[in-house]
Length: 126
Length: 126
DNA sequence: GAGAAAACGAAAACGATTGTCAAAACTGGC
DNA sequence: GCCAGTTTTGACAATCGTTTTCGTTTTCTC
Ligand SMILES: [Zn+2]
Ligand SMILES: [Zn+2]
Ligand SMILES: [Zn+2]
Ligand SMILES: [Zn+2]
Image (cartoon, rainbow over all chains, first blue to last red; front, top):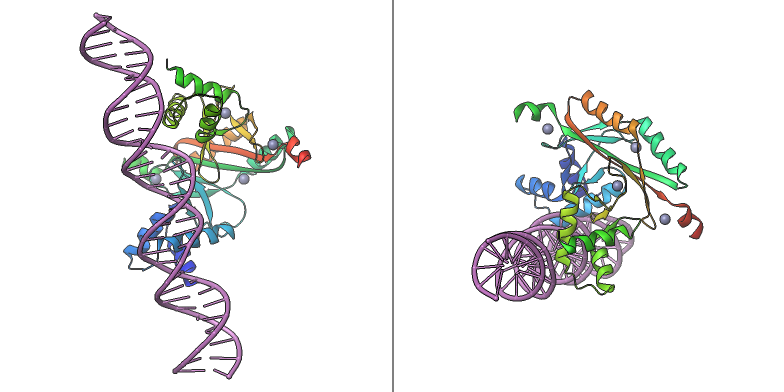
């Protein structure tokens, strides 16, 4: 529908890493778009609600978003320096999480798993 | 050292779940303490910097803290409803994270892994 | 006890996010 | 094309967790 939502989705697609709402807003404005910050937040909210984009929290609590290719459950390997992210899978981790939950009588198990590191490019460059 | 830091640590010890700075501040004030919010934040900062307490982010970006028993690397199984947390270990997950990082040429690998669910008490009660 | 250093806490500042509300863009009849 | 009704938008204000600032108090050291 909304062309604005499309605009934001596209901006996200152009990045390989996770971006914050403010990042995207800055990008779009510098490209000449007249979009408002509120709208960027709304678009990201809608996109993540509908499961079209992934969201996670940085250490300092900022929400960052990414338009992932894989549409099944997956996790991320994220470069601590440049933010580049790789989608990864870990069936064994899925099983472990479920098992550990069941073991302690917990139900309705979910989990968050993210791997951080320094990517090859950043390791050599800096 | 600081008796204030001790006060905060103790308040944390009294809870089995993760608590936010504001939670702890409210608790302490209601117990009659004249501690200031700033000091609670500073104490939590210091305690987590020195690795004495664990910290993680809730979905809405709030930082929550816990004084864990285990002092080696571990993860948490957290009740989504009451916040109760259990310390869990997953050597296989540690290995998986390292392997996945190495596989993609990343170095200096770390990871965050948390499992969420509804604890038995909350499942029956509600 | 005097003076220096560390810890405190109230209030202001901050930064990300959300709420408000009027203007702008769209819609389906006419 | 034009109008009333709906949806979307964006400037601005408000919120909320957290950090800074800065004078005051407490603790240390001699
Ligand atoms: Zn990198
Ligand atoms: Zn998973
Ligand atoms: Zn822990
Ligand atoms: Zn529970």
